[in-house]
Every structure is written in structure tokens, then in C-alpha cells.
Amino acid sequence: MTTVSSTPQPTMRLRELIFGAACAAAVRAAARLGVADALGERPTPVEELAATVGTEPGPLERLLRALACYGIFEETEGGKFVHTEMSRLLREDTPNSLRYISLWCTEPWTWEAWPRLDDAVRSGRNVFDDLYGKGFFEYLHEDARDSAQVFDRAMTTSSRQSARDIVELLDLTGVSSVADVGGGQGHVLAGLLEKYPSLRGALLDLPSVVDTADPRLRDGGPLAERARIVPGDCREEIPVEADLYIIKNILEWDDDSTRRTLGNVVEVARPGARVVVIENLVDDSPSMKFTTAMDLLLLLNVGGAKHSKESLVRHMAEAGLLVHDILVVNPYLHAFECTVPAK
Image 1 (cartoon, rainbow, N blue to C red):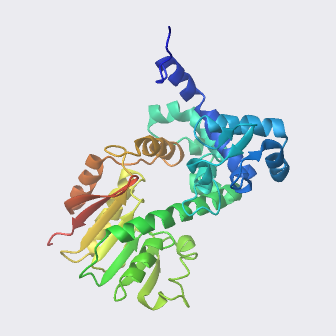
Image 2 (image 1 turned 120 degrees about the vertical axis):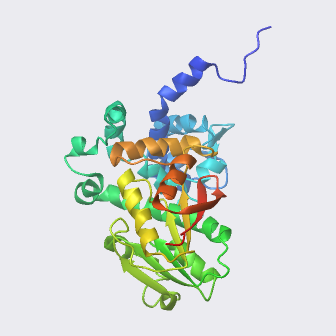
Image 3 (image 1 turned 90 degrees about the vertical axis):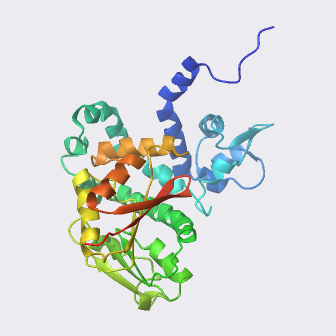
């Protein structure tokens, strides 16, 4: 009697990977159609779902069947569909929703860029300027404003989720002031100020970013009296003195920008000040399939890169920082605890 192995053969697995674009496109389609939001808590016939989301039943069934192969939705007896843990993450009202991340990573420009990955590998440069005649962020805000809005919502969602883990991890006993460098809308800073009532903090990021800072930090917000919002570019200057500097997910530009940012921290910080660098890693991490994919996307769109432990420690050491410890924030993030030495 012949038995079928439960482990896919290499040829089958490679075929599945070759069709990876189909899986990504299916996730995007489900997110855009709002299928997860339309599906309730009971097994639902595809005809009913189709009527709710405005599609034809047959094609919707094919879409859901394809997603079910990856654990996104499940087909039950009678051709009905139910939620799985992953499909719930496509709902907009789920606390850890990945709906906007799913949309962001499959935006129209990505389908133009991915086929040029071999060009980026040959040259070591992004392909975006050649494709669109301008830089990535310039293109987003001038020619693809819908995509820019998706990007903003994806980054906001991701930042809120990681902020909770960071606030829980960091011990700020004895720290009276903190600077959130390139901190986006300031979700980490707001969380820390709420946790430590005597703490004061500053949020530094580009003017267009801090204009939409967390309402808790802005004038009239409950944390405004202890928060300072500083428009600026950390690659040019960091005009903030603090006991602790937090640098999260911004050292993924080119090496020169990374060096300038870390150098600016060392220049302004007093000896003994703490510096916590928080990043995704492309090694020694359970999320490597995700982070290495993001690393390639950064190569394509801005010529940036995610770091390995070794490369990040090297950059920090070259800037003059003393690295003391590396902590696991969550499966996606590591925190590098450093101090500024005596000058």
C-alpha cells in the first residue's frame, strides 16, 4: 500500500512558492472586499457572503477556497465558510488587525517593483526612481495619495501594536526624561508617559509626521503638559537632551543615514545616557520569513535594508555607543540596550 507523505515534496513546495503572488493577491482581494468583516460567528453560505460584499458567488467561493488552503478562512460541510485565527486578523475591528498591512504590502506599485528584484540585486540600488521617475515617498504623496493613506494607516496600526509590548518591556526606573527619535505619531512615548506619571518626554520626527501626533500628546491632550513635540530630521540634528533615547524602526535607510542618526544621538546626549535601539532582524528571529521579505522590499523601494544583529551592533559601536544587552520585545522586534560613554 502506498502512503502519501504529509510533508510536501520539494517540487510541490517550490511550485507553491512560485505561485506566491496568487496568495498575496487573494489576501489583498479579501481585504479590499471586506470579506472578513462581513463574515460573522456562524457558518455562512457563500451566496449570502457574496450578496453582502457585492460579488458573484462562484468566484468568491474560489477565492475563499484558495485562502483556506493557507488557513485563512475554513470551508465546512455544505459549502459554508467560517473564520480562523488568521482570517479574523483581516477584520478592521480586531485589536491586532493586519488588514492595512495586508493592503500596504500588496499596493499596485509593489507589483511593478517585484519583477525588477534582479536589477536591484545586481546594482544594489532601488528600482523605484527608474520605474516612476522620482523617489518613493515623493511618488506616494504626489501620485499615489490613496496608497499613501494606506501606508499611514498600516504604520499607525503596527506602531500601536508594538508600542504596547515596548512599554511593557522597558524599565524606566530612575529615568526622568525620554526622547522618542523618529517616533512617528508618538505611540511609544504616550504609553511610557502614561505608565510613568513623573516622566517627561519629547517626540522628534518630520513636520508632516508630528502634525498628526497622538492626540494624547498634543495641546489639550492629557499628556500634553509633560510632552514636547519637536519637528525635525534626526539625520540632520537631534535638538533634545534626555536620560533615554528610543530609536525604533528607523535605521533601515542607507548606511550613511544610519551613521548620521546614531552620531547625532551620541553628540547631543550626556555621558551615561541610555539609548534603546529597536529593530526587526533578518537573523536569529522567528519572524525571518517576514523580515527578510521586508528587507527585499526596502531594497526595491528606497535602497534600504533590515539589519542582522551583527550589522546593527557594528553600526552602534562605530557611532561610539556601548552595547550592554539585547532583549526580545516580541517575535518581530529586538531591543538593543546601549549607553553613551564619557566624552
